[in-house]
Structure formats: C-alpha cells, structure tokens
Image (cartoon, rainbow, N blue to C red):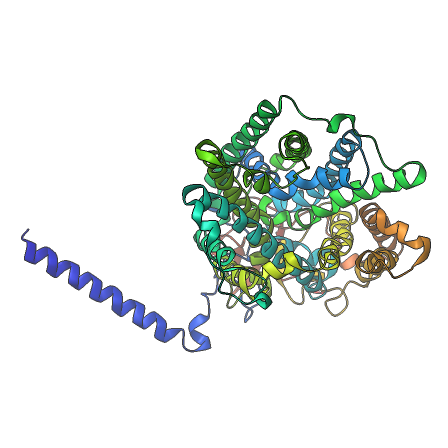
Length: 566
C-alpha cells in the first residue's frame, strides 16, 4: 500500500469520526438527545424508564468472587483517613492500647450491617436504591437514597482534595521548586496556585478511572492493595530504623479517667463504626456483582483486620516520627513532606504515588459508585453509572469547593461526620426487613413497580418512617452540641456518644416490633420471586429481567403469575 493510499484512508477515517462527533454534539443540544435506551428486559412498568445499570445485574456482569471482595476491602480500608483514625483516639486522651481496642471493636461492629445488607445485593442482585424499596416503600426509599447520595458527595470532595496533597509530594519529589510557585490567587479563594495545580492534576488523573464499570474493577483493587500495603510497611520500617525504634508512644498514659474515660471509649468505638456506615448502607451496590453469595460472609474476617492494620501503621509511624521531627505527625503525606535530599525525595515520591492510588480507590469504592447508583435509580431515563460518575466528580471535585470544606471550621467537618446518625437507622431498617420481617423472601419484579406490593400506602411505609424518627430524634441534641459546643443540651448528649449503638439497635428492634403487631401482609411472599409470567393472546410470556421476554416455560424458578399489585 502506497503512502498516498494510507494518507487517504486515514483522512477518510478521521473525516467520518469527525462527522459522528458533530452529529453526536448536535443530538445533545436537546433534552431528547440525552435519553438513554430503554431496557427491553426490565421489570419496570410499561411507560416507565429503566436502564441496564438500575435493573437486575446481568449474569455476564456477575464477575466478583471472594478474592475480589478481599481486594475490594484492601482497596477501601487502605486510605489516609484510616491511617489517621487511631491518632484521633490517642489525641483525645486515650492510650495506644485503648485506641487499638476501639479500632478492633468498632470495625467489628460495622461488620453487622455490612454482612446483613451485603447479602441483599448478593442474593437479589439489585443495588441499594432498589433494595431499599422493600422496607421504605417505593417513594419513601428516595429519601434514604438522597441522604446517602449527599453523604457520598461530601466525602468525595474531601477524598479528592486529600489526594491532591499526595500529588504535591509526587511533583515536588521530582521538581523541588514546585513548592515555590508564586501564588496569584486571592486569599478569598481559599487555595494557592500551587495547591490548585495539584488539585487539577489529581482530578484529571482520577477522572478516567471513575468511568470504569464496577464489574471491571478487580484489577484496580488488586493493584491498589499491592502498592499501598508495600509502601505502608516500607514507611513504618524506614521510620523505625531511622528513629532507632518505635518511639515512646507505648509508654504514654491516658489523660482522662473514670466515667469520662469510659464515655470516650464508647464514643470512639461508635465514631469508627459510624465512619463506615456509608459502606454499610450501600454495600448492595457492590455485592450485586458477586457470582456466589458466600463472598459476603468472608467480610467478617477481612474487614476488621485490614482496617485495624492500617491504623496500627499510623500509630507506629507517628511514634517514630516524634523522635525524628519533634512532634506527632499523623498524616502519612505530611510525614513524607519532611523528607529531603535525593533518597528522601525518592521515598516521598513513592509515598505520594501510593496515597494517590489509595485515595482514587477509596473514592471509587466508597463514594462515586454509590452516588452514581443512586442517581441512576432516581433518574434512569437520563443517567447511567458513567454519567453519574461524571456528575459526582464535577460536583464533589469543583462545585462543592473541597479546599474550603477542608479549611473551614471544625464544626462543618463534625456535622459531616455526624451524617452517620441518619445512616444507622437506614442500615437497620433494611437488615431487619430482609432477614426478620420478609425472611429473605422478596418479589424482585415488584421492586421496580410504582404500584407493586412494595407501594405500601401511597409509596410510603409508615413503619419505616416512625422507626427512623425514633432512632434519629434522641441523637439530634448531641449532634447540635457537637457542631456548636457552646450550646448546652444537658446529659442527653450522651446518646450521641453511642450514636451507632443506639441508632442501629433501636431501629432494628422497633421495626421488627411494629411489623409484628401491624404487619404489611401484602408485602409478605412465601418464597423469593425472580421472574414473572403474563398471558399474551393466551400464550404465557416469561420475563426474568435478564433476557428478552420469551414464550414457553423457562427453567424452574419461583415465578410471579401476574403483575404484582397492591
């Protein structure tokens, strides 16, 4: 083939691609151009919209195994916040031993909602937003979805900016003068020119990775596990070698005693658990991709060990760092910032790289996928997981101005952390409904129907609403005092110190009691219904939500003979 022929083919190909792009842009100028293809396999009502990301997970996307779950928890647990977690406990006056107890017990408690709600996704292969309709009702469930979505947006903003500080270490390790970039931004911006460059670079690196479908993320979880774990161990060893040991934090005594100490321990345990309730709520968004449901139960072994391990690394590194730098430095990125010289900058580069990977992984697993699933379920006609990820990262990374969130008053960060108060009853209601009230028997087609059996009364399950209020209300005075310490609320703020314990247990048992005395009998089925059968011109047509509806009887499954109704 001659050079002229190759040039002509290339030019023709580029011209066709340009025409397609131009046509695509023209289509997007009107709202109709953004409409997604409607799934023919859906259980949704005729005339309602659904797409592949909000429907039952197709069999070809059920690619996760037990090892994928292990990699997922490695990915999610290994982050800068986990490294600093034990630090916050020691900083308020407890010893390293008590911090370790709080880590282990706190992470063990969060296993309860993770396993109970994770099984819902593994058994039914639906996401959190769809699964919540069984307990809250078709319309009330949207309230739970919005709460979780707002939480995800806030934490995506924080994790993204934290990742940009790690990006700074990568760049300054190669070009030390990067730290001396003149600032041309006003003080009101809340960020310097150098910090803005780091933020733009981190966000740009993170963006394409957020677009990868969840069922194809196994390789990234494995990559993050190897990179972050090796770097964390190397950081601890290097600091201990330079310091001649692990420092003196092991001899530090508690600065509180008596009942104050006991309440601090309880508050610390509840705080650790509460920080993971975002995952406890939307864990079905991930377990829906499991091939077999037994992977859910292995979380009980993986998660507490992995999350506690990274906290222990933080304690040891900070203690050794005290010997070297004169003060406790709990942030791993700030530890790397102390390293100069050729070898020091080399170490800072790899630490920065590992925490960039760590923050991206945590953003994907804990924030973006969950928020995208929520948006997909709320607006299935226009938003799928990819569009949801784009909207999430634009809002969280830019619209919410994350650098101002980080630098603002501590009361705002306290308020954001207290959002777990609202997530605990959501977790408990879903778990109690699936395991105790419904006895694991769900009519899956009805989860997608406005007027299915999970409509309850006008789309609202009053039992869930009452339980939510009972669980949240006693926590509100303590939450107000935590955000505004000058506000006196009396001893009732003690309930806030055990917000997860109160919120989860009260919601779980009260929901079971209300359903025992006032059961919603229309929502109780004798077995899980996976597919439906309708008569078309006297011929039975079967729909399992996975393939095009077909005539004739399929393989034996529990089948709903008619479209579900109230």
